Each structure stands twice: as C-alpha cells, then as structure tokens.
Length: 348
Image 1 (cartoon, rainbow, N blue to C red):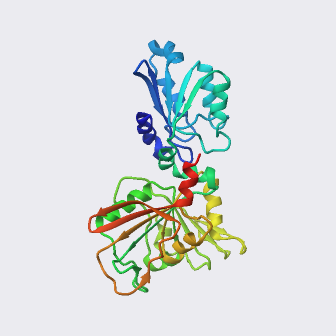
Image 2 (image 1 turned 180 degrees about the vertical axis):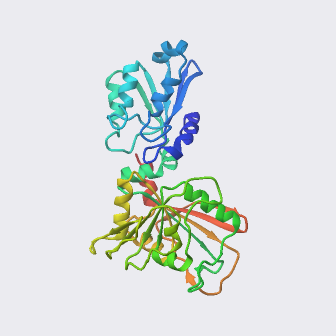
Image 3 (image 1 turned 180 degrees about the horizontal axis):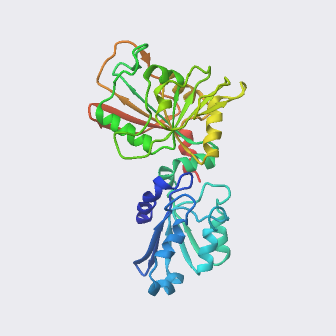
C-alpha cells in the first residue's frame, strides 16, 4: 500500500478535481503491475495498472491481489466504473486504503465487488488519503474548496504597515516555500486592498510550477484595471457587489445578500478547482476565519524582525490543532489545521 501511495503522488499535479490514486498488483509476493491516475479525464489507477501487466502475466490477474489507495469508483463518469472493470477482469482479492468520500461512490464500490464474489479488505488510510487529496475531500464532504490561509508576521505580531506598500517580513527561504504552495493550489485569493497597497504579481517565479488562478475580492469596486495584476497576460477573477467591467478579465457581480466568499466557492467548483490559497490581507483572512467553517489550514511565518507598529496579524482561531512547526531559514513556520475539518475527513 505504501508503494501505491507513492504512485498516487506522481499524478497529483495533473488530476485537477479528481483524487490522486495509485494501484499495485501483487501475484505471489511479486509486483506484476502498477499504475496511477495520470491526468484529469484519463484512465484511473486500476485501469493503468492492468494495462501495465505483461502479456505473459495476464492469466495471473484472477489470482493476484490489487492494492488500491482509494475505493474504486462505482459509476460511469468521464471514465467507466473501475469497480465493474475489476469484476469483469476476474479479480478475486482487492485491498483498498480507505472508502471514497464521494457520496456517489462511498461503500458502493466495495458493495458491488463483494456482491460479485470479490474478497475486499478496507484498511484505515483515511488520514493518508485526506493529506494527499484535501481538495477532493473538502469538495465531497463540505461542498467547497479546501482553504489554506497564509501570512507572515513580525516577531511583535504585525503583518505590515499602513501606507508602506509591501513590507518584506519573511526571508528568502520562506518566500520559496510560498511559491511552492502557490503552485500546489488551483487558485490564489487576496482582497482589493492588497492589490492597491502591495501591487503583487501572485504568480510562481522562484520555483518551477504552474501559477494558480488569481481571485480578488473587491466589495466596493475599487479596482481600475490599471493595476499590475491585470497586465500579466493571465485572466483575473474579480468578485464584487458593484457592476463593472475590466477588459480581458472576469468581473463577477454578486447579489448584495450573498457573501462574496460563497460565490468564490461556487465558481471554483464549477471550474473543477478545489484548492484555494488565501494570501491576505488582514480583513480577508479574518473573513475566512470568522465564516462558518470557511478555512481548513493556516500557515504562518514568524520573523525575528520587529516592526514596532502596523497592521496586527489575525488572531489564531480556537478551532485549530498544531500540525507542524518548522524552522525555515531565520523564520519559524507554524501550520495549524481546523479540528472540525480533519475530524470529518478521517471519520469515514
């Protein structure tokens, strides 16, 4: 199963809103096939593993054990049902890491196979699968993207200074971490004040990776279209209560009785995006922290620098549990996770 999860990791950057899944086929202690979900809309891990089996080993499949990180799908979507394909292939023994959180699949794949005489074992790898596929789990269980909040603060608890633009707080190594995280998320979000004060690019430059979709919350319609973010050749989504238009970009006007963040969640899921990286500023972070389960993970760099005064960092939420603490160059990184989110994820 550990090898199956290693394979699943290889497909993670390419599967979009689908879960990353790996599969290993064992016959008498020998691996005869392995595969993973390589790309969104393409064959799933089980199919790729079967296709990898050499012609001389095909007749061994009905005596082999399939180790699959996540419950095989039980319905026809962009690809055929994997559970049904395993049945038709004559597979007799399947070991899965954990049940699928998708209501369309949850326990149904296992039931389909067991009803056809397949011996199915279910292990307790829900935590591992949720760590691998947090966006998928959030979309299935919470109906929204997985939300990661990130900020850097001084040793005395400030994230910036009013009217000073972008104030460097964290070190170079921390900034590389940030660019890596950007590349791992489908979208990045900031408030309009951050655009007007800091004039950021919000792209991936310090590492090799794909830049996320830029989303801006602009409640009062303050942006003009002349800000640098609109001149970088990437479509920007702006959510606002005001009607406006910025050429070559998507201005989304939201009804006044609906929260902008809810509209962001809906638009992202419609576009098969399920991971959101929130970089600020303070009011925007606080809006997510104050919402009804609108955040899942918080990553905070604390520098050794002192600012003396400025914009106070948000308060760390009560509904949080320490996940990791790391020294990143001269900065300390603390990662917290929402207790409620992760209890839901691993309770399946």
